[in-house]
Length: 207
Image (cartoon, rainbow, N blue to C red; front, side, top):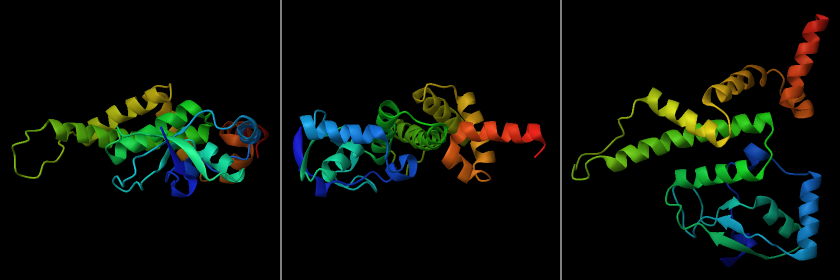
């Protein structure tokens, strides 16, 4: 474990697009607890070097804790550096997995996280295949895993991390793709499930 300047940290690129700014009562409670007892659990960050497109010292777990300390005027924070993260896909998978465990995802967030997981797991499957190919070949090595097979495996792995089957998540994704563009403002107010209830009631009324 180390102590790092908060100003040297980077927010993960997917943090805002997937989870937005947390203005909930739980964040205020977290902030009050840190003010009273200090930081109990250190954050997790990437090594102090760029990995792929990921900047050095990118936050993997602890964005809310970092924000709370900043708002409390603190300059440094305790952090665990995850040296085992070697590739951009390793980092993104760890970021998604930690957030699945730590957050209570709504349906929209779950679908968005699922899409990211499928993409990451597809890339990781190809990386694993490349790693097992003959190393003595001097020609450029490319993964030969069929696209459909790669996506199918990735879908099942991604859904399992969310505690659901690939079929169940695909159904949620299909519904999301169909309804979200038309009812984005309603979803923001009532939530994904709430919009389905509203649409059902409107249909019953003939609206």
